Each structure stands twice: as C-alpha cells, then as structure tokens.
Length: 287
Image (cartoon, rainbow, N blue to C red; front, top):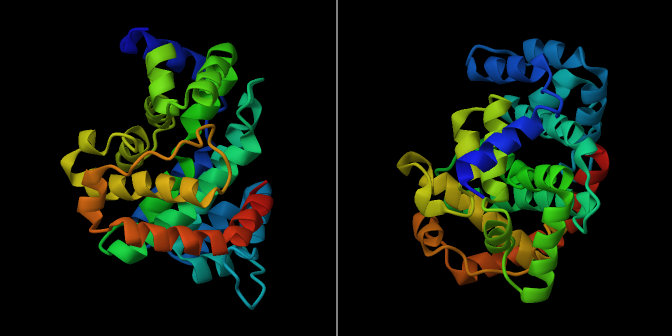
C-alpha cells in the first residue's frame, strides 16, 4: 500500500478515537512555563478526579518506593517533579484513550503495556548511564513508543493478525512484517497519531523514528537512541510482550551516540530484571 494513501486511511480511522482532554494540552503548556508552581499544576490536574486518583496510585506504587504516603496531587508534584508528573498524566490519558482499540488478534494489550512500562524504566537506566539526555522526554517516548500497534491491531485487525502470524512463524521482526504486509509500520502510525493529538514535535519524532535512528532529525538522534535501546533492553529482560520477541542487534549508531556497549546493555538488562516488581506495580496503578 502506498505510504501516503496509508497515512490518509489511518488518519481517517483515528478520527474515531477520542481526542485527548483539553487538560492535557494545558498541562503541557504549564510545564513549559518555568514560572509554573506545583500548586498551579496541581489545581489543574485536580479538576479531573479519575486522573488525579490514578496519579496518586502511581506515586504511591513500588515503582517510586516513597516511604511517606503521597496524599495530594500538589504533594505528588513536589516529590516527583513537574516534568515527571506531566509524563505520567500524559501516559495515563493515552492508556485511557486507547482502551477501546483492542482488536481480535494475538496482540495482548496488557502484555504490550507491561513492555511499554519496562521500556520507560529502561530508558531511565540508559539516561543515567549515558548522561546529558532529557530524561523526561525519553521516559515519555519509551512509554508510548508502541501506541501505533494498538491502532493497527484495533482498526486493521485481520491484517495485523497476519503480521503477528508472520512474526511468529517466520521469525522476522514486527517492523519487517508490517512493511511487507501493510506497507507501513507501527512507528509511522504512532507518529501520525501523535501529530493528530498535537504532541510536542520532539515526542512525535522519537516515536516515529525509534526503529530508524539514522533517519531522526540530527538534533534528536541521541535521545532517539535512548528509546531504541530501551526497547532492546526490555526485550532482553523479557518484560511484557510487544508482539515481537525477536531481539535484533542494537543499531550501531545508537550505541555510538550513547557510548554504551554490550557489557553496559547486559548490566542494564540484569538491573531491569531485578526491577520487574516495580514495572508490575506501575501497570496495576495506571489501570
């Protein structure tokens, strides 16, 4: 299928998805303002009780492991930070928006989200190791990098079932099978969806190019490398299932950009395995 035609079909399909609440765009705008206080952001988030309650559940989960109970949204913002809360609110909202896109194929939503949360934690580990990377953007992109799979699974169930079957029987990657059967990839679809939701251009780029580091804009190559390697580390740790258990070699450009080698990645895999309980606690809280 021609990529431009495919994009038009996808955009038409995703018009059926709920738009993200205005509150999300206000949160994004507030966090951009360096003068924003925890009180201001807390007041805005508190208007949505469903998001507020789950934000507090996440803040009190084993993922963060605070000794003291986080009782209010402003308190969560103080202990987590403005940008971390923005990432969590965005993730919670996207989880909600995508709940009704479940198709009938073998892609299991819960396993995919476990993989996504594992990637978010892996992204933090990589940022800590590499240094000099926007940890908040890497966390958000790693958490949301596979949302295109939910769109494809929900709106092109038969075709995506064929993709997953080819992956299972032929041992090819999801990206290769998507290209061969559908003519476009989940990364492209995720980028299109994020554009429709008016996400920041950096986040759109990270999701769109997480399998093609070399095609990312020059300014974004290093942070795109984080998302790319986070996916690899999470797969090696066998946390969740993104529909593709094949572990491809990391992109050499990503390793070069972040100055990490196989030994570093192996260490991060072992650390991520030890943190699997944290991943599960995050998943249970965000539901």
